[in-house]
Amino acid sequence: MARKARFVIPGQAMHVLVRGHNQQTIFAKELDYKHYLDWLRQAAKAFECAVHAFALMPNHAHILLTPQKEESLARAMQSLGRRYAQYFNQSHARSGTMWAGRFCSSLIDPCYVLRCQRYIELNPVRSGLESRPEDAKNTSYVTHIGGKGETWLIDHPSFWGLGNTPFERQLAWANFVQDGASHQEDQTITAHILRSKPWVSPEFRAQNYKFGLDHELIKPRGRPKKI
Image (spheres, rainbow, N blue to C red):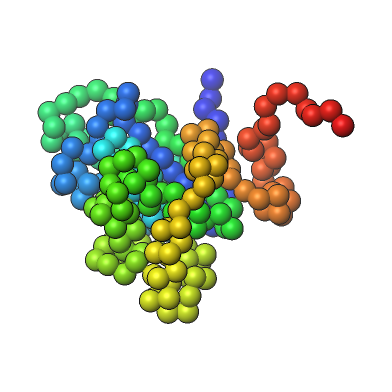
C-alpha cells in the first residue's frame, strides 16, 4: 500500500519532528549536534527550505521551516536523515534502523507560527533538561534573543512583525517566550505534530480550501453534540 503523501503548501511554515527508533539516542556528543545542524543548513539550501527555528534533544529534534516547493520538505529531510544516520552509525560503531519511521510534519497557520516556535524553543525546559531556555545549547532561542548562534537561520515574517529593530524583536521574543504557553496550547501543538496534521485557523482553512485542507484536519472524536 502506497504511503500517504505529506500535506505541504509551498511558502507555508511546517513543524517537523524526527525521533530515534524506540526512543534511542540520536545525539550522543556535542559533535553530533554540530554535524546535524551543519547538514540541516546544507540540505535546506540545496532543496529550498528556509529554516526558522530548531531544538535538538537527545532522542528527537524539532524544526520549524518553510519549503518553497511541494517536494522541498521531503527531499531536504530525506537527504539530512540519510547523511546523518550514516555518520552516526559509523561514528558510534552501531548498525540498524536509526529513525522511528517517517518524520512527522504539521503545516502551521501564519498566525500560529510564533506559538509553534515558542513551543519548539521551550522544549528543553518542558522536558526538564533545562530550567531556562537560554541555558539550552542546541536550540535557536539564543539566536533569537541576540546571542551568538546560527546566523544562517531565516526569521519568519511573523518574527519580523515583533518590532522595527533587531533589539525590539529580540526583547519582544524574550518576553513572549518567558510568558510561556498554556498547557492546553502545548497539548494542541503536540497532538498536531504527532499525527502530522495541519494546525490552522478557520480563516486559513477557508482561504486554502482548494488544497484539500478539510481532509487533513483533526476531526472531533465521539458523537456530534445534540442540538
